[in-house]
Amino acid sequence: MRILVTGSSGQLGLEINKISTKYNYDWYFTSSNNFDISRLNKINSTLSKINPNIIINCSAYTSVEKAEKDFLSANILNNESVDLISKWAYNNNCKLIHISTNFVFNGSSKLPIKEDCETDPVNIYGKTKLDGDLACVANNPNSIILRTSWLYSSYGNNFVKNIIKKIRNNKEINVVNDEYGSPTYALNLANAIMKIINYKFWLPGIYNFTDDGDLSWYDFACEIRNLTGINYSINSISTKDYPSNVKRPIYSVLDKSKITSTYHIYPLPYREGLKKCIKILMNEE
Image (cartoon, rainbow, N blue to C red; front, side, top):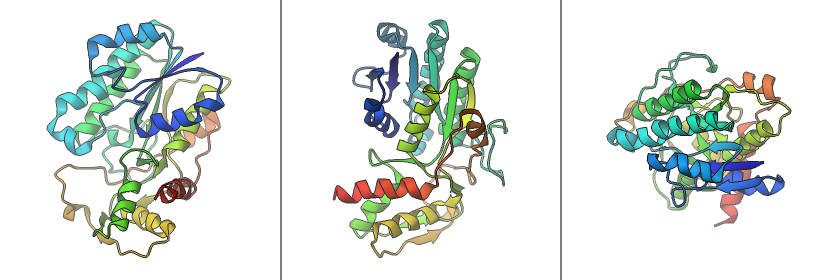
């Protein structure tokens, strides 16, 4: 079986690459260097050349701030490319796992958000990701969409690495205390994807997956500091005091009961993944 992983230079793609040697599949890892999905006119020919049995689409335009000023680029990567990839997958009997986000919801919920809750993105990033989800479902009802949140790993640029960097550089840290969600170690998401692929049945649909937790960004930052063992002050601020013009969901905790009941995937407590990631990062010092 041939598995194509797009966006393999990102956090999730690199984690999938790291564990891929455990599985006896024919792997193709692509990034913008050898498969630039923003070149829409090349997507069909490149996919036909690789001819995968499964596509794990990790490619995305993930900068929430930049998306507000560059709708065109965000829409190409998050929506238009997904439209073409999902059509190709459907027409070529190829299974598709597409990675999505909590940003498709508006954050007004008071309870963990289920897959069938009403979508209502509050920014351009969320809107383009939702449009990609809708295209995927419309074009290829046999696809799987995985919605996740607050992704981090020892790779790339993310909240965990930024907090540790500021602590090490003795920089002032201000973190919002009124936006809530669930951190997700990208390695745990990669393992969940492999459990889906290796499950006895392919059960399409939209699924939520994050690590288990319900906390604010400030709580998360404090936990990162505590696990580094470095005594450092972190300032708690409200969203209205944070220097950003982009609106974000206030509550982003996703309900994972569907993926547990369907694929028997049980999310781990977020601290377990965080401990592993910080151990890697501290050893790289």
